[in-house]
Length: 105
Image (cartoon, rainbow, N blue to C red; front, side):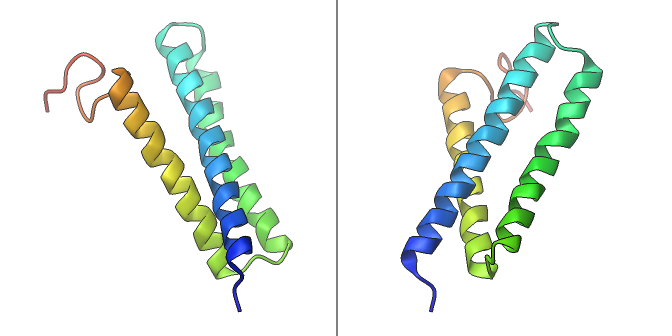
């Protein structure tokens, strides 16, 4: 039987991992567009962020997480992405297409 507390913990862990992943992406993107970060460092971050996420999933598997726990973590990660996207749109930091200024397709 799957316990609700374990699924809630997996969701929270996925939410935290997603928030950290997206915060680092946001910071790196802002630094790159402001000229404070090299494209090589930005690309390296693009490799390290997903690798860290995969390492967290591997760690969960090593601790005995099953499919339901991994799914709850993935849903938490997705919820963080949806929240960050909504926040960026409301703050004027991003649009679906065309950057911060445009919006044209």
